Image (cartoon, rainbow, N blue to C red; front, side, top):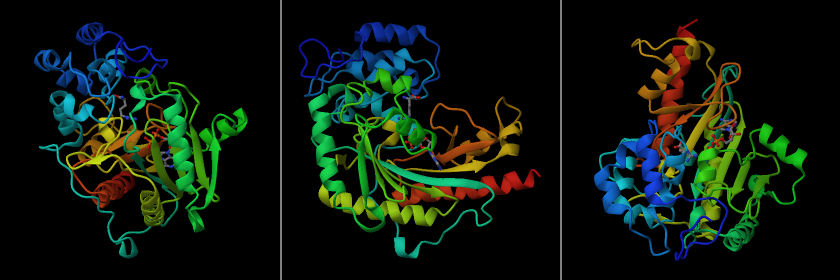
Length: 372
Ligand code: ADP
Ligand code: ARG
């Protein structure tokens, strides 16, 4: 059972412990998570008995971080209202992660897509293997995974399919449900970096895989350069990707798709947080722009400051970038190729988030070259 007795939260299949048990686990566990840092005794005492109007609890928000000591963050919003009801916990954690001094977010700005002052980050074609930008969106009026159920997931899936039918030209494609997809096809799509999987322990403890695979699936354009994930971590993820380093092409395609889909669906958003997402790391622009990039030297070199870790980690920290392995979050690098993306998504506009990634990646390419 995901919900607590007496709450309006739907029955589902991930165990949410009692809040006191979770608090105890967090006190005893060794973790560097932002949850541990910001859930002080004072904040805990203030929030432990509060509920959102859907019946969402603090236990649902912290279950993942209390059970997974490897969490970097460890907190999810049980439903959109959690950002205000549990504000004393979310606000400082949000400011810490996104490096902002106030929980506020500018209006969306995707830049002047017809006059972008960048194009291919790697005209040589030798360093950047592929480029991908994704945004997350939540359907207004629907809960996040702890408060969801099979019927709601199917409703969201059906509404999205209707909107996807409006896409045309290069965005035109087909929707594939995970429920009917052949296992081999699913595995191939995962291996090719197109499709999500259900193997993230943190997301599992946050109810992210409840009722799996009901209501889940993927849409892709005929050339597989534009994709939509339905009911993975967020209700929706829009993705634009292609081989090589042409960030401008990837960005233009994504912005075009967002505009069409925004006309046909209503997304959850508020002035303070921008677009609302399940995880506080994705709030605001929700934009993660990444390259798969070859950095064999930087990843082997030690930090210049002598601390443990690689020079790559050091440079990424300096430019607000985040390195991941090539099969996504919590995976390892293969052959010196890393997924490197902007880390901050809130408190800056979409085009600024993209530029943060672009400028950092250009610096990384220069440093990698100098190490030759
Ligand atoms: P996200 O949170 O952006 O969805 P994940 O880390 O879960 O990211 O990765 C999802 C999938 O996207 C993984 O298969 C990952 O390898 C792939 N991916 C991410 N960035 C790129 C990229 N630049 N090129 C190709 N695939 C990518
Ligand atoms: N909860 C996980 C952690 O704390 C993931 C955080 C960010 N990633 C995400 N997919 N939302 O490590």
